[in-house]
Amino acid sequence: MGYVAVKGGTLAIEESIKRLKYERIQRGQTIEVGRIQAGMRGLIDQVMSESSLYDEALAALAIKQAEGNPEEAVFLLRAFRSTVPRKHYSKVIESQDMKVERRISASFKDIPGGQILGATTDYTHRLLDFQLMTETDNSVQEWLHHYLSEKSDQELSGELKLPKVLDYLRKEGLISPCENNDREPDDVTRESLEFPSTRSQRLQVLTRGQTGAVTSFAYAVIRGYGDLHPTVGELRVGKLPVTVAPPASEENDVENDYYIGDVKATEVEMLMPFTVEKEYGKKEMEFEIGYGLCLGQNETKAIAMGILDHCLEHPNLEFPSHNEEFVLYHIDSVESTGFISHLKMPHYVTFQSKLDSVRKTRKAAREEVKNG
Picture (cartoon, one colour):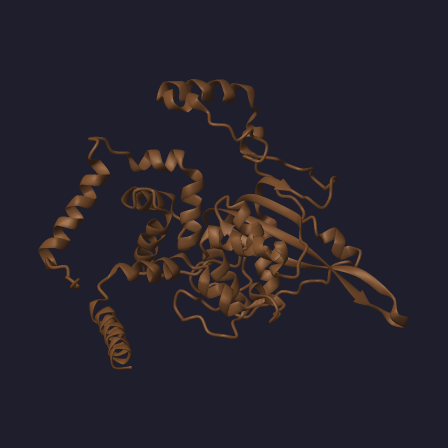
């Protein structure tokens, strides 16, 4: 059987693009970007996190254009991000200033300020809600009116400033103090990742990583393809205030900073127990921390990020999950999806060469048998 090349060129590509649009709108209906933004919070948060761009409206637009495909939506949003000029740098954000909406600890039952469950699917029955099939704008507004009438303004705001849970372990000397590192972070969106990587590079790649890939790698660590037994010290979801300095201001002049808005984020500090040998052979248990921070409410990914952060801080050739090149190169959705997708592109010359080689080898083998 001969190998037939695909022909068509520009005209075929144009028709393919038209067909793509037809598949999206063939039912004669379309979904408004505002409705995606209103009803697909989890997907929007995932796309914003993997794109390194906090803009719910643009994320919703990318999701619509990609027909709900997260990898394609991230590709679109990253491509747009690369065209946007960077005019300002915000001041350093201290995570203890987060206006907390949700905050839990799996390590301590009683924590200052209490456990705040907030909005989560953790306690739902995970059963299909068939009532959503008949949900209308009117029914939604009626439910909202009833719900809001039951809540006070303080309950609805749900924004508290709370101390960090792990500060209490630090006071007991069970966690080493963490000093500020004022070195300017590396930017993986402007300079290629190099090895050995810096921690700022690793954290950026992890928070931009494909949610499923980051989660799978962390799961592998816990199952035995790593050397960790982690516990969630604190998980918090809330809004981080963003400020910029006025022109020609001094570095420490915080009183005149401009507040420009909030960024919703998920922050996790994971506890990793390890044994330390003291004097006279005495052994004590202490804790190290793995850190995760993602845009939006991305709890599973943030936890997984904290696990992998600790793994990469402690290289171990025995486990691939502790190998920074293996982890960081394979969790990026645009890199991995792009390379796999490129296999659909024409490879006529290379494949024809392999085919010719196979034919020659088989012909030679037949000749050898015939003459043997």
